[in-house]
Image (cartoon, rainbow, N blue to C red; front, side, top):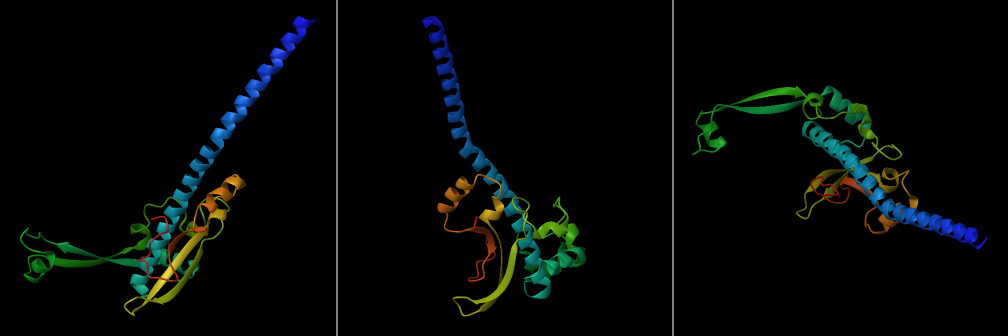
Length: 205
């Protein structure tokens, strides 16, 4: 009888040790898994924000201003061409391109190429999806424009596009999302700014 009880106790203890080991491993892996997933989601979202920035810069080069409307931006990408200036000839090491151009050693040729086939030939998603987060809730990016005064009293046009951390990380462990946000000053991944001329920088840069 005592031998049987002893065996049962050993089995119970072994089961408890295995269970404890399992929960320890899970406890170690959970924050690692969250961070891996967060980094992947941030990378995909940042890549999309960079594409939006590229589109806005091209749009401003053509129109003189940014657009707060994704429909307008997408139509621009689909239908407009971008001007490309190419130098024809060889610039000697002793001259700048401007000097070589002035001396007629080289010439310039201007031609136009479709924006979607040049600036966006790298993308692997439908261009209509540029407005949506590629992860999380797959909600729409928030896009807006403004004009701000610089320190040198020059009014400049600016744009901002962002996605909230909650939307980017949606579906991951809620407590880890709360913990991550508590360590950050910002609440989103953002490119550009509506309050300052920051050369269209992203807040991850």
